[in-house]
Every structure is written in structure tokens, then in C-alpha cells.
Image 1: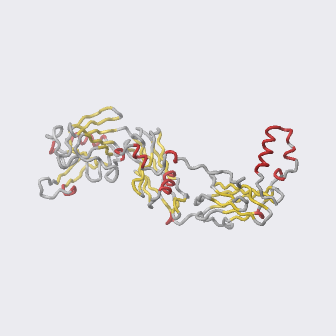
Image 2: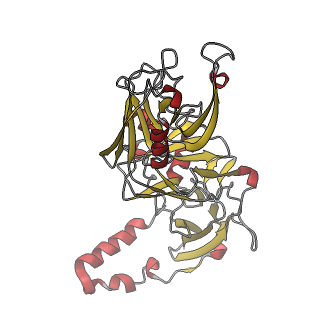
Image 3: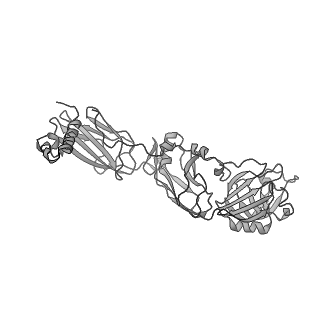
Length: 417
């Protein structure tokens, strides 16, 4: 029996048909064994899939083998319900085919097996099966943030995982499955792994004004690690409003507020004094509180010391989790526009603070320049994401620019010639 591949014979016939047209129809009627109608090869192959009425374990590879010595497998394709191919490998002797990429959980697959017997007669068998659902303990789920609503153009999208993902290959699988779309389109966009459970997404520049942004997870069913599978997650849709930017120059004690690039107000302010300098850099509005009781002890100032304070504060717009606000400071009106006397917050008159409170929303930009304070922390104290250069931000991704597309999967898997 000759087990050599017959692929060249088939291709030669095809070339001949293309070259000679109708005059070569004898190629299909000459009795060539591969021109015959394929027979049911069910008795010729063995399949490692589940028994009838059961679902396959997605943790186990799929295997198709040739039975006996009178036939061989010539070709196998396995696709899911969406037409995506599963990578696999066929042995050189045509006796065994097995998957080389993981199956998805809770998916339906169709396997098409082509064979030939010892005389070269073609056979074909089509198999279908479904994979089961791994235990919920193995499910990797994503919670997108913030909550749905309208935000400023500086609002990052966050993805919080319920389980840690540490190695680069697994992170790449997760990252490819998390999509963010903006209409109108943003300038670029990339995920940044803040830690093993947290990712942030932002474009190269701020989001467009009046955009609709949708984040989705396509992780369901994907094998992330040997013990972790993607679970179902809810998508998120948010909108952006006008582009509001508040730029505070601590050196000139002034804040200029812009709407869509046009200055709409200039406000005298006071920022942090020596030892309590306001942080430089871009911050994002985290929320607004009409009334906050501010105490020096909350930032490490001893009660009763010369810097101690306990004050009722109104129209407080929060920009860091550690307690930096833009707020009304009627006690320092004499210094506003002239000196920096606060303990790190940006203070202004009550009327100006009320206007600012009404004008901004979560996600709007508050930038400080000219301060002797430290730079805003990119993560951990609010949203300082915009202080990371775009080059550095891209380095926080598990994907290289070339790696964003999924690797090509071989569609036709035949023995080596």
C-alpha cells in the first residue's frame, strides 16, 4: 500500500482544467479515484469527542485517528459556530490529527475529516459536538468602569478582573478580548496593566467631546490559563460631554477654565503653601460633594499644632482619593490671586467655587502647573493616567503593535509532502 500524499495529483488535475478548459473533462471522468463521490468514512476513523448527549471537556485536546491499516486521513478542519478555525496537526503518515490550540468553553464545533482508502478512494465524515462550561471557580470575569453615564473627556475606562492574571501570554489573551470603541473615533487607544487584576484604557489624547464609548469583553469561553477560562461580563457604554479643562497656574495663583478650547472663566485661587504644595500634573474630577468636613488629622497634621484645622467646606470637587479638592475657601479670599496658603487644595471664593461645581463633571480635566509639589501619581490616587507619555503607556500593554491581530490559523491541515 502506498501511503504517500495524493495532494500533488489533485492539484495537477486542477491546473490541467484551468489550462485546457472543457477539453479536459476526461480528467473528472477517467476513473481517477479522487473524482468519485466521497463515501461515509465513519467506520474508518475514531473520534475522541463526547458520547451522544454529552458535552466535551474543553480542557482536553480533540483527536481524530485512522482505524486499521486500510486508510489514512488526508485533511481535517475544525471550526466553531462563528467560522473560526482551530489549529491542529496531522501526522506525516496520516494516522492521527489533534488540536494544537485550546477549544473554547460553551461552544459548538464542526469537524470535517477527509480520508482515502488503500485504493485512493476518498471518504468524508462530518462531526459536530459542543464543549461544556468549566466550573464557576475557573471563570475569569471583568467589571468595566466607571458606571454608565456622561463624563468628561479625561475619563479612563477601567477593567477589573476577579482573578489575577500574571504571565504575559495570558495577559495578551485577555487584552485581545477586551474591546473599546469610540464614536467619533479617538486618536489611538490602548490598555495598560496597572496590576494583575486592573487595566486602564485611554486614547493617545483625550476622548472626543460628545462621543459614545463602549467597552466589551469577548472572554467568554476562552482558555486563559490551564486553570482559568473566560466568563461572561456585562458591556459598558458611557458618553462624553463638552471638553472642559481647568488649568491652574500655582505661580500666578490663577485658574483658567476652557470649554471646547475656548476660555470661559478666569478665577483667582490659592494653592498649597510650603510643605503642602499642590501636586503638579493632570488630574481627573472624581466626584463632587456639596459639603465636606475637612480635618488636618486626615492628612497627618497633629491636632492642636499650628497647622491643625477642622473646617466646614462647601462646593468641594474631588481630584484625588487622598483628599485634594477644588473648593470654596472664604477664609482665604484675601490671599486668592496673590499667595499660596492652603494645605494642598485649590481654594477660591464661594461664588467661584459654586460656579466651578456646577460647570464640571466627573472625568473633566484639572491640570496644575507651576507648583513646587510632586507630580501626580499615575495610579492609586485617582486618575493620573494622562501624566504617562504615550510611548510609556503603550509599554504597559501586553501586546506589541504587531501583536494586536490574532495569529493566522492554518485553515487546511494536511501531511507534509
